Length: 299
Image (cartoon, rainbow, N blue to C red; front, side, top):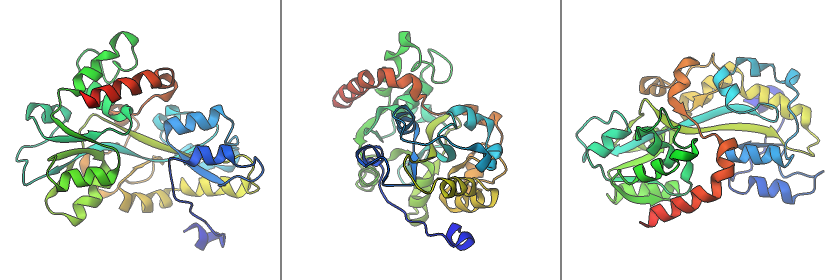
């Protein structure tokens, strides 16, 4: 769409895990990207190490259309929020004949589950949701209760921990698990091609949110900001959401029909049940939590 409207050429550089390291290792005046996508932890690192240029907000007026909740989630000083994904449940409808209403339902039915083992944050947030020590996921953010979500993970009948999306799907296909912790949009893609797959979104869940930043040293700063503004335009967000089934940052945009039916938020208030990791807090405990998580997976 952007190429058609502007005549510019957009070059997509695939990859995820090496984005930050590639920016850091490149000469400051010759970055590997003009714009880079980052999730919360990466975004914090990019800010801390001055890898992104400050956003000149007069060049991105569509930031005013972003849900206040999302604008307050992380600073927009160095990046523009674009989309996100809540963590849902993909399950085998030939093996499961009960309604999955929330995360607790999986525990109550001893559902064979595969969970994210690549990174602790989302799995531990799910465990905090089913814990009852504090409201929401506050156990994670209160030092006195850090042990609670790690204990509650054990309440799930976790038959495997996956490291990649391909591994997660393999565990479902081989019937190692009958349900999987997974992102909603990815699950809908699997459902479209497999009639034995169903997808549900718990009313209270966790998830990620992406911010896009303008990389230091780019000679296309103005065009990069123009592109970020384009990404937040209502019609662009609508078109993206229609097939991606992602959370959309623009409060005037419409989520896909499937996302609406699943319970995606349509107001700022409805975002209260989506607990995104607070990496400003987690950074100080990341090494400790990672060690505990690895030990938990082996137990």
